[in-house]
Amino acid sequence: MDFKNKVIIVTGASSGIGKACAEEFAKRGANLVLAARQYVTLCEITSDLEKRYDIKAVAVQTDVSKEEDCKLLIKQALITFDRIDILINNAGLSMRALFNELDLSVLKNLMDVNFWGTVYCTKYALPEILKVKGSIVGVSSIAGYRGLPGRTGYSASKFAMNGFMESLRTELLKTGVHVMVACPGFTASNIRVTALAKDGASHGETSMEEGKMMSADTVAHTIVDGIAARKRTLIMTGQGKLTVWINKLLPALADKLVFNHFTKEKNALIK
Image (cartoon, rainbow, N blue to C red):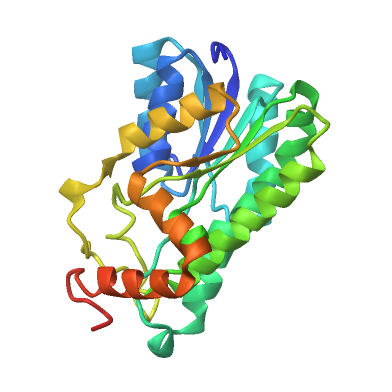
């Protein structure tokens, strides 16, 4: 697939996987609509990409948990480019707290951003994507296939995203629209630093060894190649693939293996 002059919306584009996706698409000649809450950072990113890759990019301040913001994001994309080829639903929040100690507002916040943000953006972009038989991508997680301890809200939101995307793919099966779910492994980014604690505050530190993880650039390259090949699902690591299969075939064993794995993180919540 040639991405030159395609119009691509990326949510959560101010850092991490979203920013890396913007860079990868720009390298391949795509025009970009970048969305995030951090408007100043977004403007810096769009300006930099336009200069380095001779593409056009626009920054749209967007809180994907708000339906009206998502509606305006799509409207701005159409005002600027008059078409939408690909939507990357990447904006997301994480968490780290035991459910028994958790303020329920944390779960609501995660669902609003991770699940509803995907639903809102997809709803308003879909009529345009249908016209060009484009792509809709959800950046999910292995936590959308296997619930993880200390991440009840995150896992629930990603399970919900996966179910939504699977249903949508089936509805659109005869339309030519491509629907892909991308599941990176643990990725070195600021998502764990900004992960919500039991009271809704950001942790401010990571609980894992970031240096041993996938880079955001590697994830972005894999996602863009997956779109080019119109893949259905991307599970990007051997550990992730093994987790999904063990969870399907030997779920009780998966419980024990996942429990043991998370007892080894920094300041472990389970012991």
